[in-house]
Length: 184
View 1 (tube, one colour):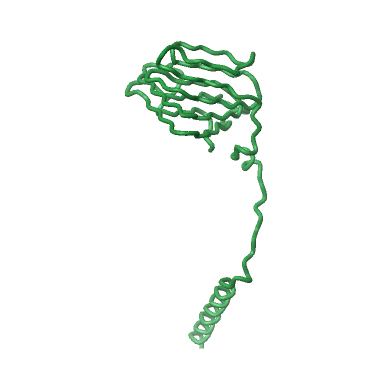
View 2: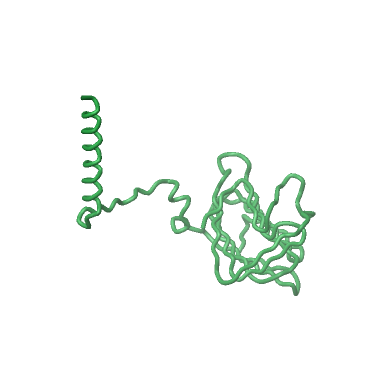
């Protein structure tokens, strides 16, 4: 008697699953569910971010790199093609890198959400990361996004030894970011 009930239960379960599967495969039963946007979506989507301005960095092996578009909220150090920018403002900034050098880098210190457009850039740093983004180590700005936008053909290479890296910082790759998240 118990075996008959178990067999009956299994058969009913099988028939229910079969019926659900059969009705789920009909074209008339397709349901579209709109996803509700969350605050994470806004943080993760570059199209939801308004950039207040663009700072242009152009590298060249024929002299010093050039930086244009920066305002008073920026402090910069340019030594040949070694470009370090410190941004003290709160607005979202887009940095656009272009040109080529076999001996340079782009280093950015910022606590704001930002974007970096690689626009046909060929950047090699024989002594560390080609692009190094250093973010704050504590709340509320720890982990702010850096969006990467690709235009054209781009190349980056880091060195085998990291002699340009201060002892208080970390670098591990040609494109490195500390205490932040990358988005595309």
